[in-house]
Length: 81
Image 1 (cartoon, one colour):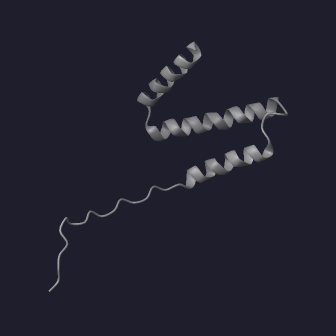
Image 2: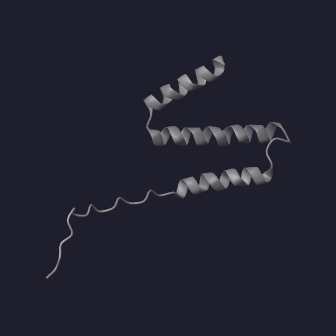
């Protein structure tokens, strides 16, 4: 229980020191590094399919683009006579 509190505190501290984008990138890098370490140390930890799914999801996140904002329309429509 104490470890969980410490992790939440340090995550909160890191979020206050860096931007949201950098915090997300750091989280993804930590995931990839920890999976790489686990694959190199243990042979029955992650399946090739699981690693492929991870790489696919990280690639999709890399190429994601936010939709552009809509142009604000006037409140009252104009009527052409």
